[in-house]
Length: 145
Ligand code: BTN
Image (cartoon, rainbow, N blue to C red; front, top):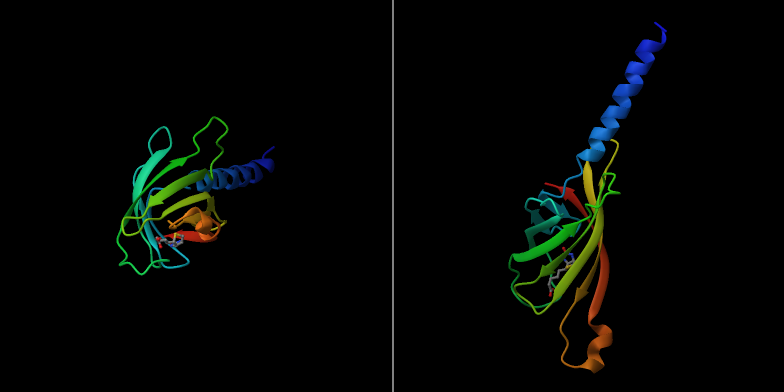
């Protein structure tokens, strides 16, 4: 029993540390993605709703880029076990387009957070014959600034 005590203590601390790192996966804060775009997410409310702002580094248009609002939702259901899934929409203030992102917040073994996302960018087209070319798809990885 005496010999087992230090082992159990180390095991407890290891499991505890892992639990804490999973808890730390919070969307709130300042993020940068692999394109160099910057995003700020304000407080996530009790229902999982959040708002923020997005400064894209690139555009599919010839318009001058401006900071744009985003609104999103994080999974807060009873099954939530940390490293939550989420979605948000960016309503571009300088173009006729909308982007929806969906993703998951991950914490790696060093406690570093990242947001792995997929997005759909819907651009406005002049008529239904052009609908086929109106949607782009891609992925972005965000890391905390
Ligand atoms: C537009 O060009 O009409 C609006 C800007 C779109 C920027 C896209 S959204 C997906 C991708 N990730 C980014 O950070 N920027 C581009």
